[in-house]
Image 1 (spheres, rainbow, N blue to C red):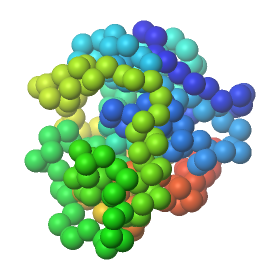
Image 2: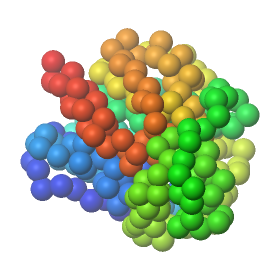
Image 3: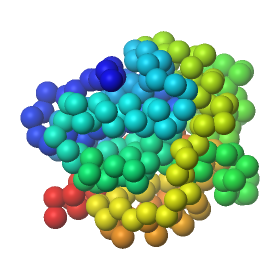
Length: 260
C-alpha cells in the first residue's frame, strides 16, 4: 500500500509520525518537527488513508487503516521503528504495538485515544480555564464547540495555530472519513485486549483535554512497563500546538530512553 509521506533530510534512524483524525502529515510536521529538531532522526510524516494526499485505498475501518500503515512500514523501512502519534494516530500506534510489536521499538503517544466510543471515556469534569473575551472570534462558528472542549490554553494565538494546522495539507476524502468515524468498525477489534509492550513509551496528556481526557491514559500504563506518563496543565487535545516547549522537553527525554 502507498501512503503519501514526507521525510526529513536526516539519515539517522526513522521516527514515523501518525496524525490526528482528519488531519494531515503537514499538520503533524508542524506539531512534531520542532520537538524532534536537532535529534538526527529521519522524521517521516504519513497521510493516513482518506486523509491529506492519500486516497481512500482501504475499507473504512480502523483495522484496515492499521493494516495499511503496517504494510507501508514493512515495505519501506527496516523494523523495528519509533512511532509517534497524536490522538487517533496514537490510538493506531498503540494498536500496531499490540498487534505487530515486531515493527515497533518505542512509542510517543500524545493525547492518545484509548477507547473509541465517546461515552466510554473518562473526561475531566472541571470547568474550563478562563479565557479572554473573544478568544474564539476568528474561528469558524462550526468549530466553536469543538475548540471550546478541546483547548486548555485558551488564547486567540493558540486558536490561530490550530486553525492553520487543521487547514494544512491535502484535501482528504471527507466521505471516507465520515464512514470510518461513524461506522461500527471505528474501534479496533482488540481495543480492550490485555497486552504488554516493553519498549520505551511516553504518554503525554492535557489536563483540560475534554475530548479524550487524561485518566484512561494513566490506567493504560499497566501495558507499558517502561512507560512515562505526563499530564500538562493549560493544555488540551491540541497539546502540541498549545505547549510546544514542554512537548519538546518530554520528547527529548523519550528519545534519551530509546537509546539506553
